[in-house]
Image (cartoon, helix red, strand yellow):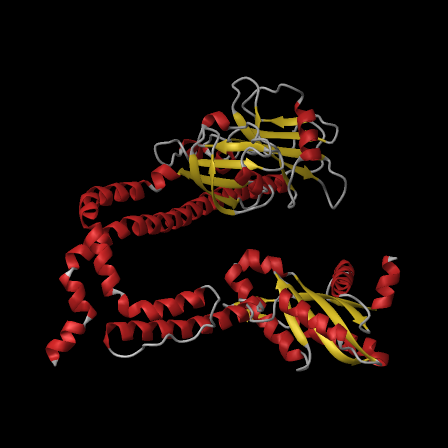
Length: 544
């Protein structure tokens, strides 16, 4: 009996032709492994490139931040206003080690009339310095008061410098002058190491790009420094990056070399950094593995192909029925259902395992359906689910009843993210979501649109008293949001601006969302921590 069971075992029969199956397996592995390795290594390289790019971008952003801070310190130390030759200034102004290291190109101080008060720059001016400062003040970019200008090549030695300018004023009055700091791009304390970095033997490396100026600010290839970026249509991945895409992609550079490129934003600037490595170097292992497997299997496969064709047909006969049923299900010709033949023995165990996998697949499909309708961070419904519920509510509004849509945007949330980190910010969003849900009725719905924006659907409202009810609910939502947050030992405070629209069901989802968003901005423009509620017909009249 035992011998019979052994003889019927698929393992026993496979052992008889084990050597043949190993050879076939080698041929299959040559293809499967190369595909797997290519995808796996490409994913690892992409992650490494992204991590490397983020590290370098953060370092550059930190260097920019240090220079902005130092320039602000220098501006705060100036006696104001100054109109002469700087006689009232500290003789050591801007010459201490920290400032000299940060502003390696020197400082330029001009008054309101464009007269140069102080010039410690180490290069020649091709045009009056005052004209240059006025150009920076008019075209520079900087939301925190420090304007970052387009990098330039200075006269004389042609070295590239990055100017940063801050307007000097007293008590909110008109600026009495400008202070400009210059940093050599090639300075080791700034971008010097970046300019020398190489990734691999093909010359790939880093590119620091200013999309506003369409300019290569810095590059591992010195020939690209302060040159214009490619015209639109030449490099599609570059075009996407210039339009705001940040991530990983594969493209060909100007030399025709295919590269894996990671693009990340540089903090404290509108620049972005590209970290690239040639795919031929990143994925060279795959080609070597394929060549090795091919050399060791080609002769054996050619000798055994006829024998294997006969034996595989015989050995896989027990799986014919199950395979046919599975094929019909994969083509949609039959509903997903357990395969027949589950039981003992290898084939029975295999079919049973397939049936269990099928059960798990159905469960995962249900989970995916849930994930498609909910926000992964807060667990709240997302925009897609909320829009469907809002559409249903509009279609089912009864006579003398109404619904309301509230658009809530958090005030002062960005400082929490910037100062305490995104993890703390995520925790705050989760707490806000919980507070909003606890504040509403079971028939109401709160959803997260993204970022710090939430929407609330209030249904089954008495049309005659809807305005007072909605305003009371909005005040309650603002009240719970403004309650302090104690997270990671820090006390956080938020505000909320709410725009609300009351509808009797005669409006579209798009109109209600647009009106609520516009009203929210009215509340925010009024100082925040407030709500602006209107009836839909009022919003329609204002739009007209």
